[in-house]
Image (cartoon, rainbow, N blue to C red; front, side, top):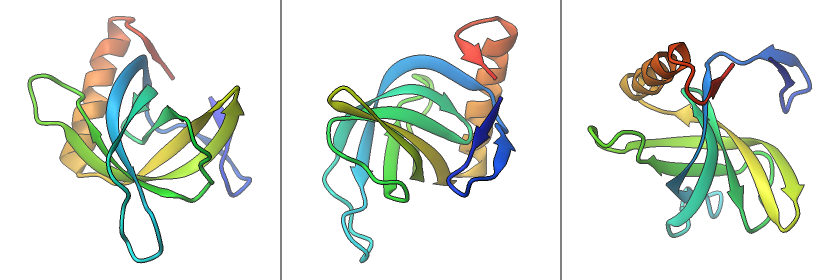
Length: 128
């Protein structure tokens, strides 16, 4: 699937996505001093090793930074990572925000990717 990045260039998704809503914790970068807001709960619509899509009830701007705590697997500790908004679309009273992960441990990225690949081969809620 081809998408247009925030830089206007065509690119291909690097990772498969799991299309399943789930709750995650989110903190938004409050200012240029690296301070984040308090934690909030958001509904992620999908997840890949490269990013996620979530809905939020307040306006979000492209380029805003976030911290996430994602309870991806019951068998493992939650995934903590940072990302930046690369796509924002208003849908009714909510904002759909596409995030690219910018800071995530390679081990956690591989955990997400491997789990989604297993689900993909079982044809469970995954798209390319």
